[in-house]
Amino acid sequence: DAGVIQSPRHEVTEMGQEVTLRCKPISGHDYLFWYRQTMMRGLELLIYFNNNVPIDDSGMPEDRFSAKMPNASFSTLKIQPSEPRDSAVYFCASSPTRAATRYNEQFFGPGTRLTVL
Amino acid sequence: AQKVTQAQTEISVVEKEDVTLDCVYETRDTTYYLFWYKQPPSGELVFLIRRNSFDEQNEISGRYSWNFQKSTSSFNFTITASQVVDSAVYFCALKGRGATNKLIFGTGTLLAVQP
Image (cartoon, rainbow over all chains, first blue to last red; front, side, top):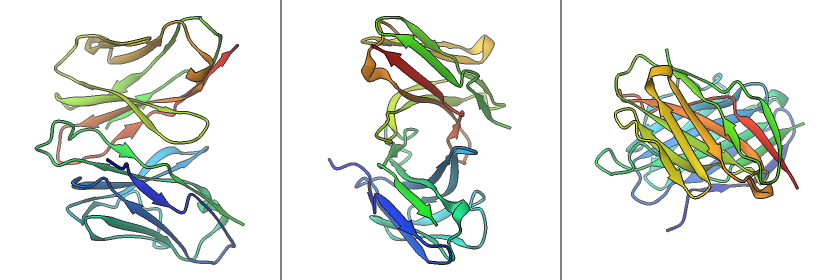
């Protein structure tokens, strides 16, 4: 089985530009998570979805950030406009349905390293 | 509130030494789950183990072992006979049982194994 897929792996952009990060969860997983990793704040949850519905977006830093999950196999995290302080590694993770044995485990993608100049 | 503390920021050992990474957690949930993840220099997060709060048995997997002690709210990770390939950042994480599905991560411990 393929793991969580993220694209692009690296993104360099200029301040003010729109950035879109993409994620394909593991097939059959009901939960999808977006995390951000920085030196200052460590790993922090931005938002998570269950069955394509956003459940908790309390970690989204501000209105410049938005996330969507139009279907079970695709999610985007968009930053508009981007700022240098958004530079970080963004991880997507997915986990199985509550009925699954490994429900409590989250499987992480390789991450997208974003640099905003 | 839930919290995970990894007091060791960096540890350096020489190959073949044993090393223990500490993890202390706080939660009010009576049922919860603890995890360890490894982040090698390549950057991905690799799942190592999950432990349920109602199962205090220690676990061993090859050179890795985990010591879960509810009395001290600790979930420590030991690598026996460390190898250079063990060099990575190791994260301890906590998840409560409630409706929320959030993983709370510690700040990580950077382990450097010198040849």
